[in-house]
Image: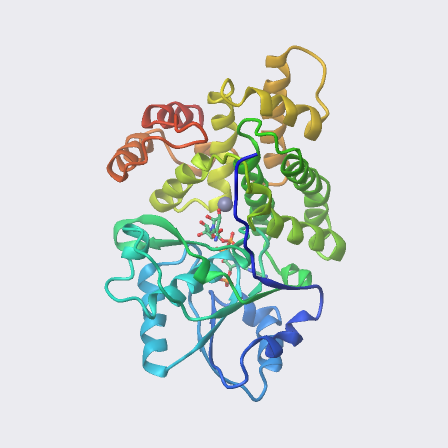
Length: 384
Ligand code: NZQ
Ligand code: ZN
């Protein structure tokens, strides 16, 4: 196992009715800005619960944060916060609202152009404190330091991370997810699954606990994910998937082990260029990334085949083929298509992505830094 430092201060309020407890987590004299998305919280009762919980508190609202949040929209919130002297943010929504709020939190006190936080990885020195009420289990943003923001003007989707943008608290009430469209339930399962794979499916690092935690999350998603699609009000299944998604990317399973993330980097480009949902891009890329990198990932692919899919008979190559096939079938079974053509995208996207990677210096991705633009081209060719 490699050396590591682990720090995660996010207080989780898990379960039904927990929105009622947020006031105690926010300083009494805070001037609060509630941030939210396109309006789902106003039709599913979440907004009413938040408002009731904040009775007597001083708060304003900022809505309209879109999926794959836009810099242009978020900067309007930054202006509002500066003008109004807001000192606490409350993100209410999915990963996009939470990510967008992280960016807003870092941008408000930032000196200079806040896009530099992503484009130049400029250091975040302070941030407005914030909490989150999560309504879509998928990204893990509710318990991590990451944020992904899109500059619409240039179709660039970039990320930053800073310990200063850990939420102070996050509410995870599975009942808030009942109103999700099936497509978003499906997306959440695939995003969480892929987060685990990017931290697990690399090479052995003598970290059996991290391996088994990762395998447990994958198996739980395989068992519980389909239940959330079959019965939209299965509280226990929703609760289990929600906790899986948080555990998949709160840092714990990734400590002391090599990580990949090349599937995500390619996926972000597909979203930026073609607007394909984040999880859909992962379902397209991951099986083919595993295929192309099968020799470098051989030992972990065999372990994955055996422990997650129960594949222990046949030649090594046959087991690896089956494990990759099972992964693809799982994504399809939970409702996420796995080919570029399913989304009307052709292979002409490949040079656009490899050129962008070269320009940004993303020329050595993956746990072995051997995912070069040439490898990216190979992977995307298989995604047709
Ligand atoms: O905007 P509203 O009206 O709220 O509708 C949203 C949106 O249209 C809707 N929704 C959310 N909760 C709902 C609901 N509809 C009905 N009922 C509810 N309870 O769902 C749609 C998608 O929401 P979004 O927040 O975009 O989805 P998700 O949570 O999948 O977030 C995706 C974003 O997170 C980034 C992605 O790149 C993408 O930009 N990621 C963030 C990560 C992180 N911070 O660690 C890691 C991930 O790998 C990912 O990159
Ligand atoms: Zn993801």
